[in-house]
Length: 378
Image 1 (cartoon, helix red, strand yellow):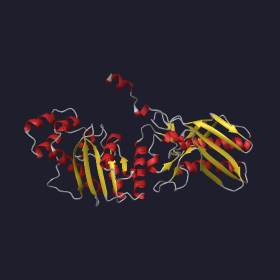
Image 2: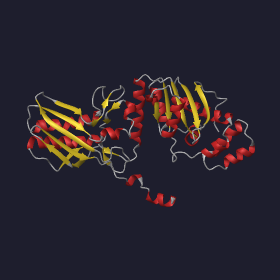
Image 3: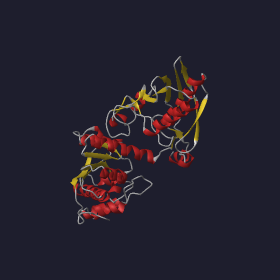
Image 4: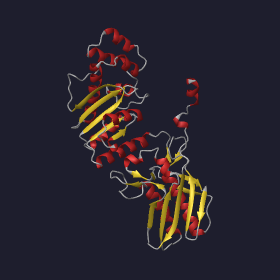
């Protein structure tokens, strides 16, 4: 079964790229404008993307009335597991007596309610690059047809509110639907840059919301444990960093947040404890020699140390030593020391380790100085 899964798994270089919601919205704006001016809805339109290439989008549905046109396309995210894959992206355009380009969001496009995002509070969640792209195709049409009136554009996503429930939009203060996103125009499958951008955005929102204590986790399960551990903190304070520990810590340091807590499980945090700041399984293997060294440091007997060296997973080591407070405290302190060293700023760092079932294995709290005598380097 495992071999079959390996054979079926696609090579990232062979994965099919898709298009952003911003690119889809831009294309449908161009199509609707073309129909408004010429009286004929095109079957497809081609736009130039920020990444430096042309892309053609089909018009899959449209509505025409006396004074406005709506064109729709189905978003294709390629092989990326995007929540907006297959979403209906619509643009409705009409003439306006007021000169200029008037862009807004309609049904299913969220509205910004918290500071810290690249769009001001109160505006539709259409990010700067898509705004520029949409306004660009409108301006081209105004100049091409010598229009002497304004143009209103409303971007809608009929199922956007439902789709947004699968995203972090609510936590970021984007209410009522999805965001219209994209800096390249294309979607790169499993893109690290997209995930890192979402981390930066979450930190910015937390800072602007007044959070002075952030809790960073490696995934949904550890975040659930963290929220139980810190029930007094607002939702914005919790940030899923995935594998990007060092990147997240550096961005927290730049924002001068005074306190950060790392919450996670043995697999990834045993790597952080030895100074690994990118904890993807491919970037660094688990060092059982290191874990045995920590055990030796706190006085675990030699027989147990030999068992650690023969373990298959870090979780298994956690099970072996569950209840040994000294071992887990040392591991958590090491995570704090390496985090402090990485950030190189005044900040208090805490680390809590959980077992897969939610049992707290150990913690170290409010470490704000490096202790060379206590810091185990392996």
